[in-house]
Image 1: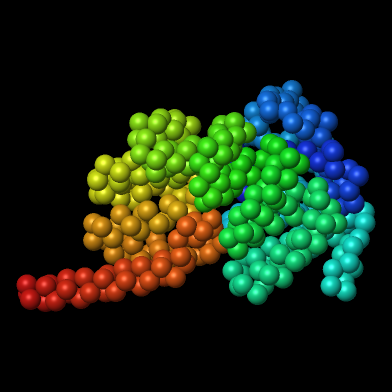
Image 2 (image 1 turned 45 degrees about the horizontal axis):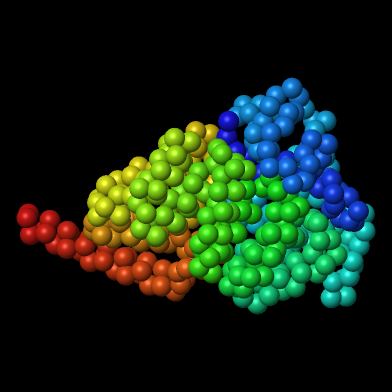
Length: 357
């Protein structure tokens, strides 16, 4: 079995049963509304006679069309939630109510959310401010619409307004307790606030909600690397590898252990041999700091071409939580420096070849 996000960046299995009193959420009622109950920790349920753990599907199984509702949600590569029509295609359904935003009547919460996400993904501070106002208005109108909550939490995180971000993710987790990524974000945010116990609690909750996903396990490993508890870090990273030995996150965890032991070349080899695409040619879901550590190890062993390429790849995700810890401009400078060294090395090799002739 494989998570929805690994198979394709889709979300399903949300429970909006308690949110039916709200106008726009009612159009996105979960297909599992009759199966899940809020607050239930054991996310074990049956669909069509098959048992599933968490919001998971059988790897090669498709649900009968009767289980699909008019609205659906999906996750973008930059980790925002988008709304769509039935089976993740087409326009999201019209809401059963409307509200006003800066003189405009909003009758489709799904489209309104998607417009805000488009602004967020530009990484333009002015457009981000507009998107935040849009999402704040959306949350005020419909506090139970998960996409508004999640995206507003992401936007506050990007703005480094960590307490506000935590509040949104906690509300979102209360509405949709099965979605593991809310807990990953809460763990990251609490680490940024240096509240380590809370961070560990939320990472473990993410693992409980989705035991077939490796990112939270690796984040736990990294937490223990930072706190100099290497043996405990190894436990979680090995567990991630046992879940999926080809997972980029699991491979990153293994590389981190090699870096910790001073074996940069071995870490470089692990990351170089990691495939970011699955057997179907689809890009896997993975923590974007993968590119940072690949670039760092490549620089240390003198592969500046790869270093520049990996820094550049990381810069394509300006909204990633990684940039809460690292300056975007610093990564740009490191990319430029690696490219300069790559050019110098290429000239030296060309000169040596000519001299050898």
